Length: 205
Image 1 (cartoon, rainbow, N blue to C red):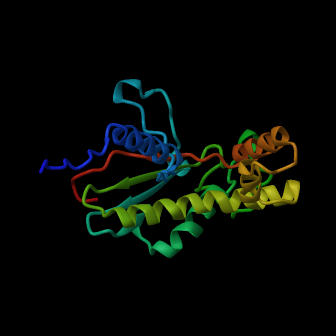
Image 2: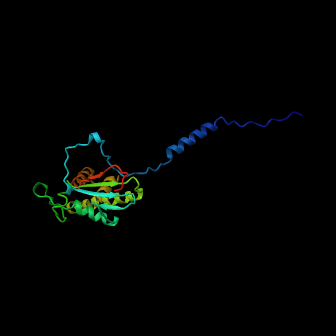
Image 3: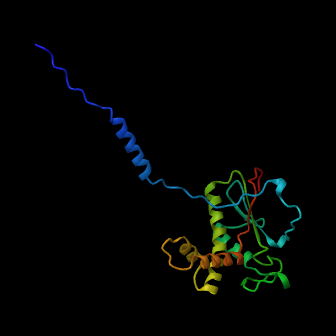
């Protein structure tokens, strides 16, 4: 009696099907992107302009040492007090004549910053500073800028600076985005973000 051979399954198209499924998943899958902190890196040493002179009173020194301790103007400070200290510096408005700040509501201490356009926050951290502490300080400083910008945006336009940014990113926003963009830029110029980050140091701060 002749043996019957089992029918063969044509698997030639399986590779094509697998390839099509791979393309489908690549096209339809959404890959989440992690967003970092937007910062402009300092220029290389040979590009630094040496003729720029910054008054000592217009410089606000924030330092983090290897033990994650915070110092502002060489004095220890608690992290929850940093935002208020930064606002007091940025909003001081101690300048006279051409450097006078009409919208500043600070103490107008002649020993502190002349106006927000001159005020620079210098952040220095140790290489041993942990990332969490560094981000905490960053958030407090950025929050100080945003609070002042929100105040001025509400005063001038009746809407906060934060809400302006939300509306600008909203694809369904029906308002004039060109005008909104101009207003955001105007508020940013009132309190420009001048945050200088030096390269981390190895020595004790």
